[in-house]
Length: 105
Image (cartoon, rainbow, N blue to C red):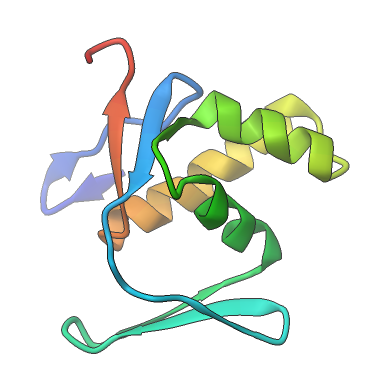
């Protein structure tokens, strides 16, 4: 993935993720919504993305997030890892989370 000409590292099971945003999210039916007035964006998270958001209230490895989700949803570890990485990449690109490589820190 490229942002402003910079290649962003892939998010994998070793990465540690945490919320970097203080934007409040609220439930509306089956989606979690938030409006960032400063940036002019509205965010909508489906149930599985909202669960990821809940799980990263404190810093957690992607592998730990997947371990929880594999127990809660009928999903295999490989599919979960791929889907969670995709959701987290979108959250990182939106500035909602910070990602560090556990091997570096």
